[in-house]
View 1 (cartoon, rainbow, N blue to C red):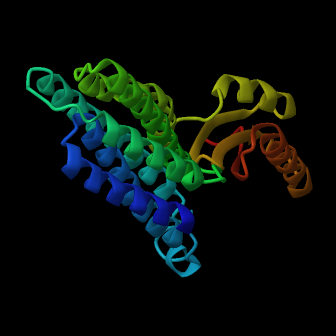
View 2: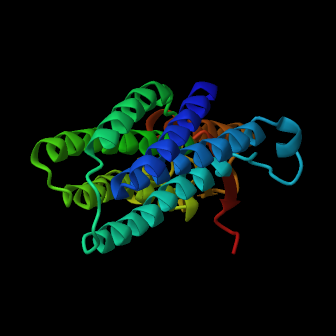
Length: 271
């Protein structure tokens, strides 16, 4: 993460220099993305530090601070979408303005940014926060490749309108990469079930037909929780109840990856 932080900082600084040399709309779009990456990484580092603090988690947050992963992921994706809309607007308006041919600066800055971003890409993507960061950087890497190709074409053909058209192409790439992760993050944030309830109930009723009030949700993408009620005979012993509970927990853990399970037993005489 530290390597990613440093390399995205250098990428942002390189685009600042390139923009003030050329005033290219596409370079401005690339700089905006690099800057958002830098700010996102900074926020992600802070969030991940908090998640690892047990003394913070043991207070009012009984499930810890894992939900911060979801918050970071949604911020990452929403910044991409908002920035993409801004870039699209800027690019469209620049089509009607007189611009200079900035192809050489675009080629050099895009090539440098592609190299730095390639090495800045995080190796681990084991939670939504890191996935969001990964999407950020990969989308920018693809955008820099597009910028490099457009710069070469502009240098050969002299068509200056390719500059804002390239920025719009980056916007399309960003949306294509961002929407799936936004849906996944929103599902976790709204405590949607990570698996279909009907399929779980079908398996659980094989253990005990009295299972009902099943609720399944995710704290983050790797911490899943379930609660359920089991209606049993009033003559059920503690040992028998514990055997049912063990079977339920084993099924949910091994087949569905649900590690936190709360089972409430109630007799047929209960209201």
